[in-house]
Structures are given as structure tokens and as C-alpha cells.
Image (cartoon, rainbow, N blue to C red; front, side, top):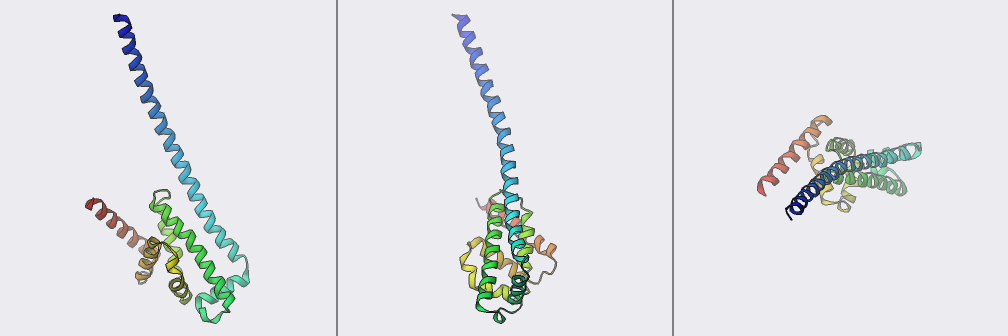
Length: 181
């Protein structure tokens, strides 16, 4: 009987050890899959934004019309105005998605710099404000806040400084949220 008890205990130990090894291997596989997912997502986001730029700026007439809209939205036809608004709306949907994915931890947080630059680049243009005032309610509150913060910091002229301001503000907000929990 003692032999069977000992054999049973050895089997339990071996079984437990097998479970621990299995859990370790699952965690390694999970990390690898997480990295693959993040890489795939980053590539997809970048490809979407690059496609927006490529498809748009391959057509000289559309580019000129868009630039005219940005400089003076009232100087273009209704059709050109609509096209420019839809182009900006489309780009900002991609950028909003990128911000969401970043905040969910799927994309690297340095993507904020790219997002900031894309939004900030339009701040000196009346067409940017025309579009934003007309369409901002169609975006998530998080994206609206993000763009409004960039607009409010318009005095920042260097994109690197702008990025640093947002990084500090976001880190400050996260620290306050964690301390209040």
C-alpha cells in the first residue's frame, strides 16, 4: 500500500510540474503572439494612412483643390469643398483609430508624435478650422479632446515641443488616475 501511496504522490508532483511547464510555455507563446499582433496592427495603421496620402496626392487637380480649400474654404466650388471635407474626415478617422489603438496599448505610444504632426500641420490653415468646426461632433470624445488640446497649444511652433507637451500632460493625467484609484 505504501508503494502505491508513494507512486501516487510522485505522479501528483510530476503532473503539477507538467502544469507549471505548460503555463510557462503558454505565457511565452502569448508574448510572441502579442508582439505579432502589435506589429501587424502598426503596419495596418501606417498602411491606411500612407494609402490616404498616396491616393490623394497622385492627382494634381485634387491636390491643388484641397490646398486651395485649406487656404480659403470659400474660394472653391461646393463639390471641391465637399471633397476636401471628406478627405480630411477620412484621414482623421484613420488618425482617431490610431490614437484609440495606442491608448489601448496595441500601438507604440510614440505614434502620438505622428498623430500630433498630422493634426498640427493644418492649424495655420482656415480650411482646417472650417472642417473641424463642421465635423468634430462626428468623432469620439477622446479624439475631439486630443485635437482641441492641439488647437489650444497653437503657440507651440516646434513639433518636438508639441509632442513633449502632450506626453507630459498624458503622463500627468495617468498618474492622477492611478493615484485616485
